[in-house]
Length: 569
Image 1 (cartoon, rainbow, N blue to C red):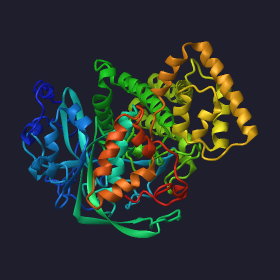
Image 2 (cartoon, rainbow, N blue to C red; image 1 turned 120 degrees about the horizontal axis):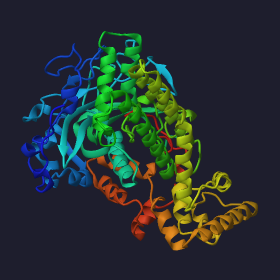
Image 3 (cartoon, rainbow, N blue to C red; image 1 turned 90 degrees about the horizontal axis):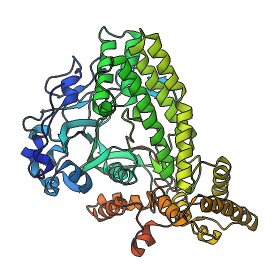
Image 4 (cartoon, helix red, strand yellow; image 1 turned 120 degrees about the vertical axis):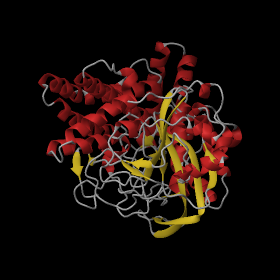
C-alpha cells in the first residue's frame, strides 16, 4: 500500500482550482488490486464482453455533449475542503460530466469499473449475464474516475451514467435526468437524516443528448410503463469511502470455490484485505493475523448492516431491490434506483414494480440477513484451513437474526420515547397505524409532541376513523403516556423523539415536478428541495410546511411514476 498524501493544506485553504484538486488524488484501489489481464491499457473498453479475472477493468467514461450544471452539494464540498466555485470550473465540469481527458498528474487518465455477482435472497443468479456464466455482470454504467484523500478521509468519486463499460450488457451506459435528480437528492436527504449513505457531489445534464426509456404517460394508472419517452442524459457523481459490494466478494468467492483460475483464491484474499483497509481499518488492528481480521470484519459488518436497516425503517425508507450487488460491504446505503419512502403506512410498501413483496418495507431485515449470508459464504474460503476460525465465523452468522432484532427493538423504543422496548405496545400501535391509514412521517412527528388527545394525531390520518377505532387509540395513547411519565421529564422525551422522527420526508409527487422542470432547464425546484432536505428534523416555515408537510393528494394514489415506478433509468 502506497503512502497517502498529506492533507495539511486542504484543512486550511479551500481547494479552488482543478490543479489543486488533482493533487488530492491517491489511488489505493488501482495500486492494491489487480486489473483484468485482458483489458486495454488505455481504458477504451466499452463493448460488452466476459471478464474472467482481475478486480477491475480500466475504462474511460463517455463525455456528455454540451454539459450543463444542475446542482452540487455544498455540504459535501465543504467537508472535502472544495471551494463552491469549483463546481463551475471548466475542467472540473468536464471531468464530472464524463471527460477524463482533462486529468492532470497525479490523476490517472482512465477510470475503472468492477464486476460483481448477483444473488437474491441467498440464491445465486447468472441469468442476467449475457454470457450465461456470471462473468459479464457488474458496473454497466458506473465508472469511478477519482480516488483521493481530503481532510484526512479517503473518498472514491464515481460517475453514474458515464457511458458503457464491458459490463453494460449491450445497454447505452447512460442515466436519464429523472433518475439522476432522484439519486442526487435522495443521497442528500439520507445523509441529513443521519442514515449511513453514499453521498452526492455534482449533477450535470445534456440537452444535446437524449436517452429513450420506457416510462408513464401523463395521468397514467398503469402498473408498468406504457410509453417510451426521451429524457436528457445526465451524470451524477456519487461519493463513498469505497464502492465495494457484497456481490463483489461473492463473485471472487464463487471463482475460488470452483477454482476458475489459479489466482482465484488469492484474488478473493486481496479484495477482502482491501475492504478492511478502505472501510474498517480504524476498527481492526493491522497487527492481527489475517484470519482474526476476517473475523473482526464479519462482526463489524453485521453490526453496521443491522443498524443500517433499522435506520431505514426508522425514516420510512424502502430500498426496493436489496440484492447482494446493491449491498455496500462498508455498511451504508448504496444505489438509489428503485427506492421509495413510505407515506401511507403499509408494512408491505414496495414502490418498485419489479421488486415484489420479498423486498418490501418490513421485509428489509430478512433481505439483509440473506445478503449477510452471502457475505459470510464469501469469507469462508479464506478460513478453510482453520476449523476454529470457521466455527467462530459461523457463530457470528448465526447471531445475525438476534442482532437484527435488537436493533429493530431499540429503534422502535427511540421512536416512541420509551426507556425500553415494549412488544405489546409496539405491535398494537402497528396494527392501529394500518387500520387508520396513517401517514408514517406525519404521525410520528405529531406523536413526538406527546399529545394528550387523539385529535392531534388525526391530522396524519388519510381517512376518518370510527368511534370504535378512536376508543382503541385513546386507550393506547393513555398507556403510552403513562410509560413516558413514569420514565422522566416529558419535555426531554419529546425533544429526543423529535431528533429521531423527522419533520419531513421524501414524497415522490413533490420530486416529479423537480425533474420535469429540470428537463426544461429550470433547476429552481431541485435547489429548493436541496434546502428543504438539509435539515429534515427542523420545523419548516409555515410557507414550506404548507407544501412539504402534508398528506398525499388523492390523485397521486395509484399514479404511474409516482406511487409506483419501474427502474428504467
